[in-house]
Image (cartoon, rainbow, N blue to C red; front, side, top):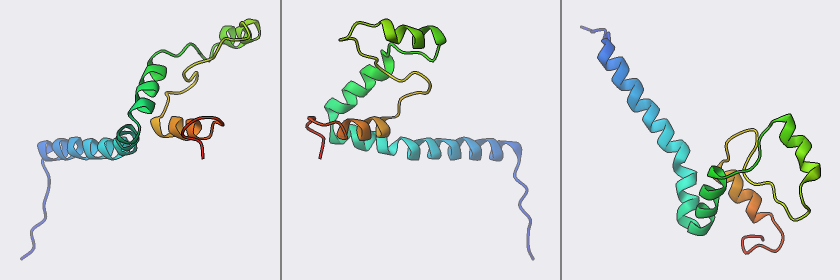
Length: 100
């Protein structure tokens, strides 16, 4: 005798919540690995991702030409920074300890 399982609303909601939590934890995995591997890189990432000076506005884009020569554009203007991508970019910079 076979029985068909029909989940109730609570089962669906709880299953969805646990599933979403599992996906989020998997996506954050590389960030935690990078932070464990290089705490200084993780610290710099946190600072830059929270204290950027750039935006996607036309006003900001036009202001770049008038910035002093020693000014730096920091952070990410059009999308949130990603730890993995930041680590890849830093490791590709010449003259850094992380460059190969």
